Image (cartoon, rainbow, N blue to C red; front, side):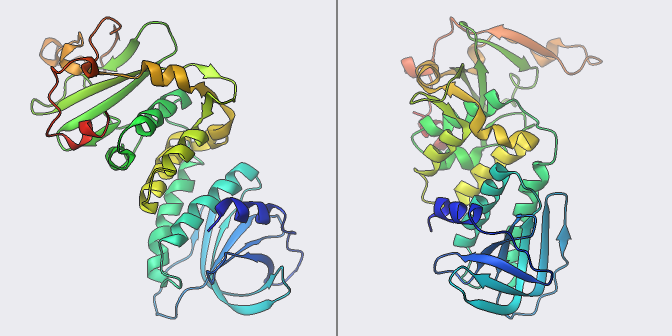
Length: 332
């Protein structure tokens, strides 16, 4: 399925002008489902489910609505007209960037479902879709620079699948990547020196944990061969993934992180060459830190800034043992 072709066809599709439940649609290649438009030119997926009985309530959210067993007439661009019941998923937004993201993410979900899914199978993916687009109406929880840096670590890794599986499910997690006892925290800076801000907890993991700090110099750039956006890194990572589930997880975390700033997925670019050349990894035990035992019990939310410029990158020596770590071995 060529998703970009589908997106282009949707944007050129005439808005529905009918008063009744009749809609203009385009085909999704060999799938029985359709993509259409409302009179406001909102994108609508018409999903042909099987006849298995299953009672699922409709979902109406700020940006997304999901309605099951809706009888309507769809008019295809080739002149065919079909009357039947569909499950209809609508994104209520006229923002073209948001529309494209909606079409892309749900088209990926359709590719991993049976050709005619049951309402129960569809509802599982719909819940994930609701999670993504509910996040888009929330306040962004992390700066774009930090997200870009985390994506760079995934993109530069030997096995992005492992990094994606270990990536935080919510942006406020203590560590960016966690797999068992092994953890990675990504820090970015735009200055000449590696000066990073840490919370007390970040540099005081549990005694059996192993923690690497990834440090990157990230500088804003114009969009060119070396100036890449979040979208560019996302595309590069997806080109290395065979698993659609991993692509969906990747997109979900991007959406949850950016919230209403999702339009900046294309708008802000950073220097890929500088970031790649400066990507380094440090054993947390070598970083000067405040120990928990030294903090009075009535003091909380301790944060501090540390300059790690002169510390030794573990990739330049054999002092760090990563042989039994799936997470660390996926990095380099």
